Image (cartoon, helix red, strand yellow):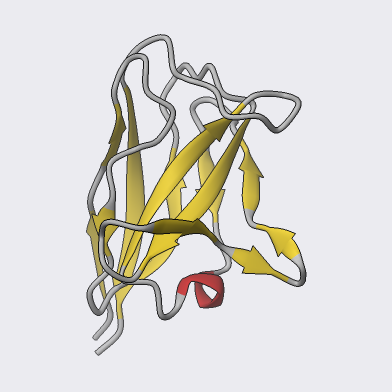
Length: 114
């Protein structure tokens, strides 16, 4: 039977990237956003070692989502297969790195397939 678990990403006040999540055997399906966001977009980054993060690229484009407040953002799970850890990078309306004006907590949703 499939199981669903949840975790959390935290972006501290004044920071532009979230904490990292270890994926393990679970597949990241999407995430819930906080009620307020400074960022206009969120870029998904992956790491193989938890220290070096790179942009996730699919079909020659960096994987980004609109930073919609109080929303569930669904992801294409196959795009992150092979990533050991993932995090969110915050971008402004022009696509440049930006920081959050307060702590932001994102609630990722995973599914473990048995």
